[in-house]
Image (cartoon, rainbow over all chains, first blue to last red; front, side):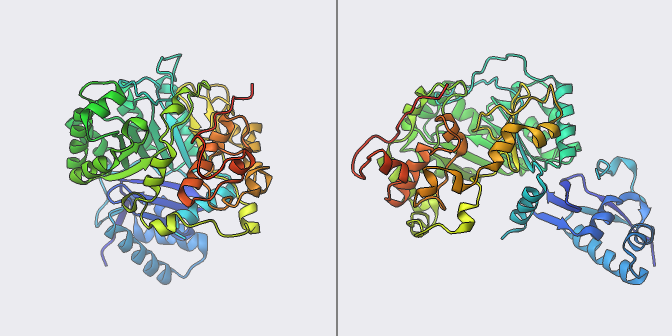
Length: 105
Length: 365
């Protein structure tokens, strides 16, 4: 299976509120909130870290989830957000010029 | 309950200033007859000071940021500030008269991911709009700007403040909004000047006209629902409720760094040139007093049948001399919406068939 890389779109507004990330798409003003697991994935979506590494390092370690279940759930979450254009997905690392600002904790 | 309401409730529980209205200048290229501001510059914050405040707001958890004025584009550094705010991932809304927006400005706003641009339009008739703004050609310029913004794909809202001079023009402005393909919002609120001068309140629309506005389906939606009499007897939830988000999840910052609970609530609560925003937000005795007030604490309004449905503005009440008192403009709105006198009106011996729309009380000094 090929590796995936994920990066936050710069065309969004986001802020952490009580451990959950609020996101609003600038394109259509759709409002999202992410649960704590998705929030962690969002925060480390730097466009350079492979998705499989994010799952192992950020999700499994922090939330003590089975790696296969975590991988499946994260892929579904990534697919959902990418459909709305707020998370970018590629099969290779993103060049620096395409990345948005670092996410504040 | 919408997701956004859920997050607003969460912000309230956590004491997070989710929304900030930031007037970055009071300077303006228009001189609107109803404006509450002094447009001279008495030392507004520099670019670096505003950027520092934006850093502090992001750290405090602010998500919705409204840049307003004065006219925001009077600042030469406006786009630098906008870009900085977007780098901090705020949801940015802009309030403007749009006179200085042409295609390049509109394109830049889109590129920076502005969520919404609100443009003030008073009338579809140039002679009325331009007489209110006291800037010849302003309706033409603002309308052209809306087209530029819309062509870029930005979300635009026409804000139609209603006063005596334009009170019959709302249908025309609505039609203009439809023609331009943008949203429309109407506001019949005229506020006293920030220095306490109440003379501009004479511009408020008379009650009979307000009746017409509140019973106009195209303006309020479901008239029966909007004008429904208040339910009998306020329950505990209403009495324990707080009036609005001012000071709870919303703050206002002036170009001089003064912090207030809301743009319409000029209670000085601190200054970001002297203190960090978060320290003002958490520790200001003024903000904490505002937060402590519940409906049950309002001596007149707690006895009023409208207590659960009134749009009572604590800032307007404050400008009348008592933040726990009634806001007479909102009493009038409740009355003209439902036909039922407020407790404040009854206390003052108002009958439902006569009397002036606005009771002007002197400010407590």
